[in-house]
Length: 81
View 1 (cartoon, one colour):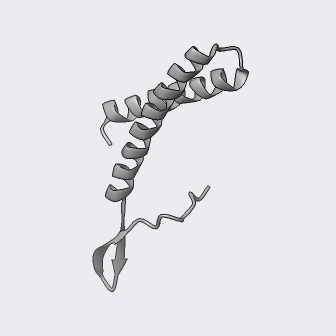
View 2 (spheres, helix red, strand yellow):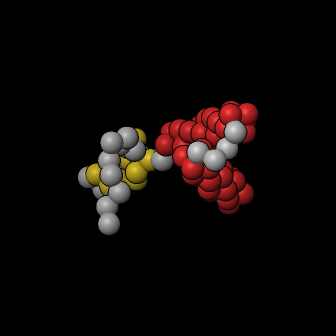
């Protein structure tokens, strides 16, 4: 992921969280809520597409019997701390 794309993704996630907070607050009019909801859906779809693209690109380089091979990234693996 390029630096610009990463920054855009992070900005979109922050904006999406702000929208969620505003909607949860319950202080918006119905019209404002619908506009925020539509914006949130578009941001969510964009973020999802970016994550799907990154997932397809992530591969782990493994050394087996003196040779390197590429293995697909396991979808259900959790990050290790």
